Length: 318
Image (cartoon, rainbow, N blue to C red; front, side, top):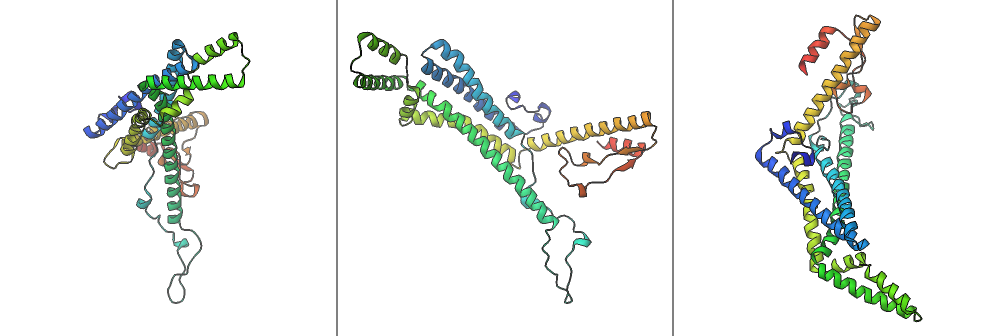
């Protein structure tokens, strides 16, 4: 089950039983949706080509594509970045040079300049809105995949109903074609019947089945198998009582910090061996804000000279 969503085995062993159970059930439902995708793909390709060989081979390929798209949307739900909540943002320290001036009565003079706290709130609010839109987009893609799978499944569950709808449609097309071409000879009529026998009118069948109980049941079944894992992963991702997302984020950040520190060590060695510098020139300490260095340039520390002793001590803290 770890392979389904690409979960880390080391972190998995640290999770509580309820959290692991939810991940397991989400993976099982996803595997069930893969089976539905394969069955729906084979049924659709068989209706489209009137060939069982093409239906099996092409259907497996279509089912694989649908399952991969769904899996990517679910995996990205597990690996979403963790942003601080808007309400939990603490106001940044106010610089004395930026404090509001006082008038002669001691009252603060209103200022039109935005504060660092308001800028921080705006930034985090934009991040939360962007993350919400990305989640809704993933949900739309998964819902669309479930609808694509649901209608061929309805034609598979209601096989005889689908065949009756196809036969009725063939009779309608045949009568309309005869009315428009009354001068058809016997050979043309035979070719027309042969072509109609090979056409199963899948779109017309799906439109009719969507209005029947078997079609509604298939839509609900497919929607549940596709969307329930999505909402479970969303709950696991955003719930305060679940810890996989936080532990995984901390582990990745620690790995980035370690890699960056080793890069700095290589840079220090090159500076000493190639250029003979006794004190290494260290870049901005972006490792303090991994992985995307979201702090502004004004908040970062300038270029500093760091001795070997200080650097070794910092490595010990990682």
